[in-house]
Amino acid sequence: MNDKERKIVIVGAGISGLTAAAYLSRKGCNVLLIEKNDKCGGLLNSFKRQGFVFDVGARSIENSGVIRPMLRNLGIELELFESPVSIGIEDKIINILSGEQLSDYKELLEYLYPDSKKDIDKIIRFIERILKDMKVLYGIDNPFFLNLKNNRLFLIKELLPWFLRFVFVIRRINRMQEPVESFLEKMSSNASLIDIISQHFFKNTPVFFALGYFYVYIDYLYPKGGTGQLPKAIEQKIVEWGGKILTETEITKVVPSEKELYDANGDVYSYDNLIWSADLKTLYNILETANLNSNNVPKILEQKEEFQSKRGGDSVFSVMIGVDEPPEKFKSISNGHFFYTPSKKGLGETHRSRLKSLIENFERIPKEEVLEWVDDYCRLTTYEISIPALRDPSLAPKGKTGLIVSFLFEYDLIKKVEEAGWYEEFKKEVENRILKTLDNSIYPRIEEKILFRFSSTPLTISKMAGTSEGGIVGWSYETSVPVVNNLRKMPDSIKTPIPDALQTGQWVYSPAGIPTAVLTGWLAARSIMENSHSGS
Ligand SMILES: Cc1cc2nc3c(=O)[nH]c(=O)nc-3n(C[C@H](O)[C@H](O)[C@H](O)COP(=O)(O)OP(=O)(O)OC[C@H]3O[C@@H](n4cnc5c(N)ncnc54)[C@H](O)[C@@H]3O)c2cc1C
Image (cartoon, rainbow, N blue to C red; front, side, top):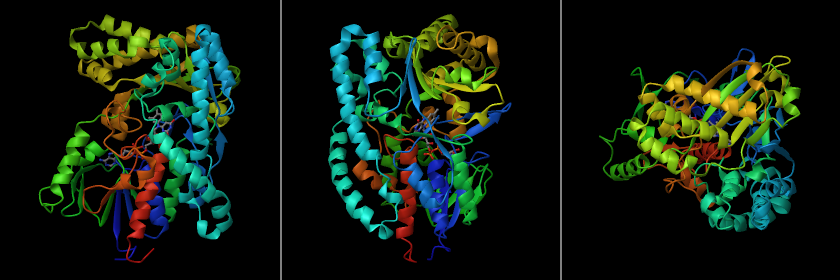
């Protein structure tokens, strides 16, 4: 079968499905990309409200040696601004300008915890070591997106020496999978210090990935027009190259024995190759194994059971705010991507035993007590604050500023609230407390300047992108992940036990995020192209 005859159906037009579709349609394949929402992009998206542009998912996009080379390789011109990060704790704020120079962060921690100077020194030295490895990992354009045949000099002078360092670094990373919290506990007995360093990472994030974020902070990019411009630009290329995109079409049944997909209206789509670029629990839930070859079925059922026993990772609560203040006012406080913690005390048991008990006993606990917990959580947690207009002034009406303020939030809690029938009320209560906290700390009198506000919760994310437990970067780290989590084995992450089906995106590799979603999308496209009879 040649490229034109082979029908490739990709389900899920997030960044991963889009990447796969772009490479395959550029190659002249017969591509159909199916998306349940009315637009592409999934968790990487932007939208406009009252003249303000807000980002749905990632507040910036880390290059990781992947995004720029992929865009160049696809011939996509997208203006990308650098997006520096600030970190603030109580009234002290620093700007992260260099991934190797952590002296400002060290000074900040020493100022807050003068009795823990020795511990801080140890921790900072460890982070500096990780940053050197991150530089090897991300500091070079990913060879997947380079045309090495035409660039032999680069191959010999840069790529081969880099590869040797890369292999060494990968080995070291694989030894640094311990959860960041327990790792830091070995370095300090100061619980507040540990919380302040680690509480805005997902629970049990592997230490390498968490502490490596100081490199990510200087690697962030922001597309002109908002993060949603990246999927939009790829979508345009797919259409230009003849790929078809079907939006507002939710796949509700997968029948591999017939190589057919069904949507919610009962319409059928046949395929020669399927790429599943959406939630994996969903795939196995809607998969019909009835007439499959008996060799395939046990592996599929085993895989299904494993996925069902795991959970999506942490999710977020976000409040979008239109503020009647110019961007300069916010620029005098921080950069456009800002991690802010109003109290140096740290979350402590608020997001551990107290949260667990709240969820377990929710039905017996009065509303007031739930809101008391929310009070404490809002005062102690770390906020990720994104200010689109500080990256691109056109993203808010003149003289005004949009803020996206978010923090990690437990899916199970919001689910219980919804079941108890006070979801909308709860959202407003959380918004009020967030605004009060910001008003009392980093943005005095902001409450008086608010033009409008609205919020999204883990339930919004779960419904919008169809992700299990509202997970925003794939599987939870709290138990072992049911997918590949070793960089060297990433090419295996796209394989499934389902005949002629590949998988891509944030659910197929851990730790996940935009760069790995792109890489797995590219790997799936390559796999299909390499197996094509036309030899392309
Ligand atoms: C608030 C937030 C902050 C984030 N911050 C970062 C960050 O700093 N760095 C980073 O790397 N990543 C970050 N992420 C995560 C990142 O955005 C995602 O990991 C990535 O975009 C996932 O891409 P994907 O293509 O794998 O999946 P998705 O974006 O989830 O795309 C899957 C698509 O499939 C569609 N779909 C689902 N089921 C079906 C079906 N049955 N039929 C048809 N279509 C279906 C969905 O609607 C969706 O469009 C963040 C995410 C959020 C929400």
